[in-house]
Each structure stands twice: as structure tokens, then as C-alpha cells.
Image: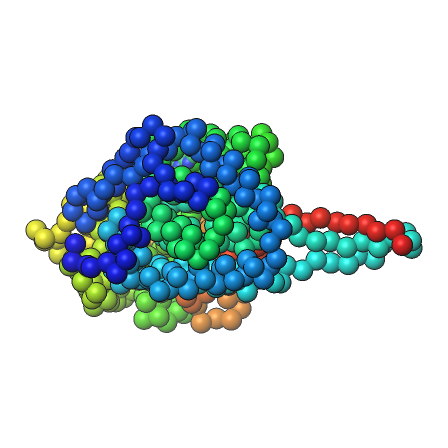
Length: 490
Ligand code: ADP
């Protein structure tokens, strides 16, 4: 690759249990591929159920002392860890580019987003306040404290591989818990590097454990994490189908869960919107990371009075915004999809749309021979109908289906006509509509006249089948603590 690592030791293929870098006890491995050319990057330790149990036991052991650390100690740990990630941001971005095919410039953004969470949690640690409660009995005094839960299991996805680890693991550790993290097989190397920096920052053994596993072994790792009584909380980001299964398994032993699952974000442009501004918002929401985030716009509703002009401005701006080529070129800002599986889904949605009368308007780029095996250019589909596949199935790729609408009532009903509710976006210049529509949309997050809504200071999460719990924001550490009420007789 055209990149020289400053610290090549960050690139490791082992798991991390009880402060030790380990291979699988069965010596099994699985391959990680570079999505830019489908070449193998390396083999990674493939751990199963027994190794997972060892990691949970290590985390439980570490919890016995870690739960008693002062918030000052944890705060310094968070500070050093964040600083180390910042110092090594280019190497981390390179690992992300290598295993996910993200353009290097975008990988740097995801590393920054990942560190933002650690900065935020560091500040939040000292603000874990309790309450004093006026007691009904005059001889009693009641107050509350927040305590860590114990071992937290974190199962993370591939699409934002640094931030998804720090957002879960960072919050859990900041609150005084210990963690077993199972990263997505596609992006194990990123999670390993983040754990290496935790170790170097002075993170005690067993506080942050990494169990890498293949797609094949994910289920047995999941079985251990959902059934082991030491695990008190499962934090998962991924598909609704897997999340539903894990949530149900956790219910058997009343583990708390944080479930950040799929979305199907509506993006509404009302007739009074500023078209240029809405187009810019759509480009960031729909096409960033090649459309591979759970908050990407998926169902795009444009008022019928402006849909034609909107489509042509969008097409023009796509051509001006994205630059293509090697993902290592710092000017390139649009990369391939993470796998062939993603490409197949896109082709299926296009075929379905064309059969139902949709038309391909194209995007910013004509296909060329230099495009790698998993590349798909930004593409607009006009004449989209609500009977098409994309309405019920997250595209997770750079395809924008434009659907016309006429009235506010109609579009709000369409936007809410889905079993998921993560993010929604809309553009209007009318203040009354800002309030009415924000309140009417059935999602955990709404972007009004913005296309990018993810930030460490904001509670991130969904409703309906998009899951439970919030990550980031003031809620971040609450998610990983229990409230204890203490009644004192005076
Ligand atoms: P995606 O389709 O985006 O990969 P998944 O929900 O399949 O989403 O994967 C998200 C995370 O969940 C990954 O780390 C994956 O390995 C893990 N995973 C998938 N199936 C299971 C399972 N049965 N038990 C535990 N983890 C799982």
C-alpha cells in the first residue's frame, strides 16, 4: 500500500484478553480482505466460545478493582487514551482504509469522530450526579448514587470501525465497567489497534478485552456473551434481525441492552425549501461513506413542484463534489462499498426500480475499467414509487431514490409508515413546519436543515425496531450505570 506506518506495531492480528495478546486456543484464523481490490490483508485470530468465556472471566476479575477506581483516575485514563489515538490518527486511518476501503480522508474523519467520544466521556465522568429525595417519613433521608453495572459486552459493526468501538467501550469504561468487545470480522484490525492504545495509555489488564471472530463463529461468541451471568449489559450496533435475536437472548437473564439497529431514514424537502441547501444536505446524508451508515437518507421525498429542478441540481453537484481514484490519494473522497454483498443489494434494488418504472439519472461518474470490484458510483433514480423495494429495505449504498409528494399530511404519513425509527431529515423555511414536522416524525433523531447529525454531545439512538438506548450525549454514561437509592435513618 502507498502508506508508511509510523508505528507498524499497531497493526496486529491477535485478540486481547486479560492484558495478553493471544491467538485462538484452537489456533484457527480467518482472512480480512481489502475491499478496494479484494486482496487478502492478513489472517486474524478466530476465537470461539471457550475463549470468549475466558475474556468474560478476565473482565469480571478486573471489575472487582476497577469499579472502585476514582473518577479522577478514570478521567486521566480516558485523557491519555484519547491523546494516544490523536497522536496515531494517521496510522489508525490507514488501518481503516486498508480493511474497509474508506478513502483515507474519510478515515481520518472517523478517527476524529471516535476520539470526540472519549473527550466527551472524560468530561462526563465527574458529572455522574445523584439526587436527594425528600422522604415521606421525617426520620428518613433518601439519596441516590450511580454505580457501574459490571461486565459489558460490546458487539460492533464494520461501518465506522473506530468510533463504534470508542462510543461503546469508552462510555462503559468511563462509568467504571469492564468490557468484552467483539468487533465485526471485516474491521477487526481497527478494534485491535484501539485496544493497543488503551493498553499503552495504562488501561489495567482485563478492563478492555477484544475477542475477534469470523462470521462463522459470531453466533457462538454471541451465545456466550448473552448467556454468561457475569455479563450485565449487551451493547450492540448492527442489523435489526441480529439485534432482535440478541435482545431476546439477553432477556432470559435480564441483561440490560443498548440496541442501535437499522434505520430507513426519510429525507423530506418541502416546496418552500432552499434547493441548494437541501441538495448539499442530501449529498452529505445520502452519499457520505458511500451511503453505508445507519443514519443515511434512504427514502427521499421531494415536493412535486420542485422535484425536477432538485434532481438536476443534485446531479450537477454530485459531479462537482466527489473525486474518485485510489483510496490512498488524499484528494479522493468517495470509495468502494465494503463488500460484494453490498453491491448485490444495490443491483437488486435497481432492477426492482427499473421494472416498476424508475429511471436512472446517473450521478457524478461514468463507470470505468479502473473501478475496483466493489465500486459503485453515486446514482440518482427518478420516478421512484412507494411500491419499490428501497421503501422497506435500507439501501446502505450510494443510490438516491427521489419520490414526489404533494401535502404535509401525506409525506408525514409516508415517512412514518415503517417499522423502524432512527433518523429523519427535512428542509423547510417555515418555522411552524419546523416544529410540527419535528414532533410528528417517529424517529429518535431529526435533522432540520442539516444532513449530518451525528455528534458526541448528542443522544444517538432510535425508536421502534431501530432499538433501545442512547449513545453519546448526557445520557451516555447513565446507560452504563445503575441508580441505587439509599435510605438513611437519622
Ligand atoms: P451487518 O449486516 O451490517 O454486518 P450484522 O448485524 O450481521 O450487521 O453484524 C453486526 C455485528 O454483529 C458484527 O460484529 C457481527 O459479527 C455480529 N453478529 C452477527 N451475528 C451475530 C450473532 N448471532 N451473535 C453475535 N454477534 C453477531
